[in-house]
Length: 43
Image 1 (cartoon, rainbow, N blue to C red):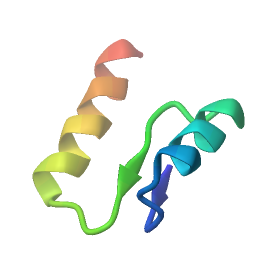
Image 2 (image 1 turned 135 degrees about the vertical axis):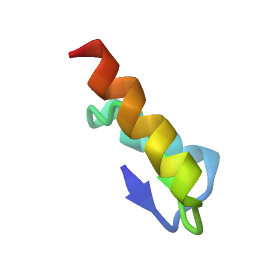
Image 3 (image 1 turned 180 degrees about the vertical axis):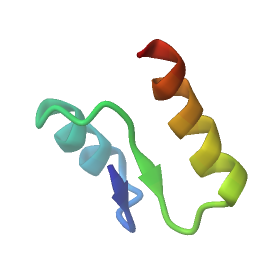
């Protein structure tokens, strides 16, 4: 999940709704690639 919401409650709601990861804005290209490769390597 990519969001502008940074609170702990929002992270908990995302997890309860089935989000596999949580990234807040602003983010760097390195942050995005790290998450993308994490899930690509699991496939």
